[in-house]
Image (cartoon, rainbow, N blue to C red; front, side, top):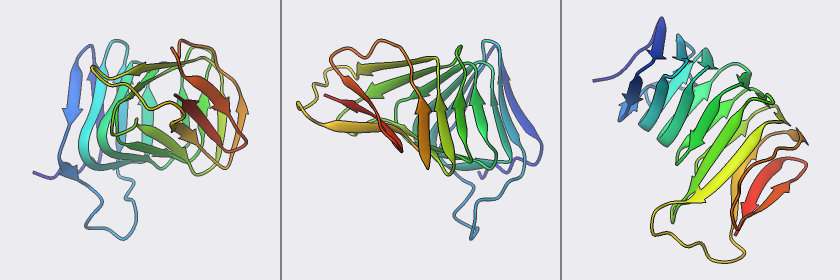
Length: 173
């Protein structure tokens, strides 16, 4: 069943998982209908399909497992974004000093944040391998990309090397 959000979808102290939806294939551009919001201990997981919102607000955990999420606005991350797969597209990305990105890397790669404008980094970037996955040395995984990247972040990236370039943030095995 299609999920057409014309209001708000909120996850408050619970997990809301959206999977298999297709909010974009019937349109020539991304529709911007409603908003997705995570509150406090809430988890909003995108596990497949394509979803679009006029606004995405993250005060809990936004988890990208597969599929795509398009935020028509600029996104500020004061909480946690988990990148296990899929693509989160935004019109500008700013990570606050309290923000955290957790990238899980597997044979399929990792999830990615794509900004159609600038990326501003602060906070934490953590990286870990998926269970039973060992990356090939030298493999580069793009975690963030935008028209420009400023700032840096701390974190636990294991054996990966963090690369902050002019338009991308990468992890190299």
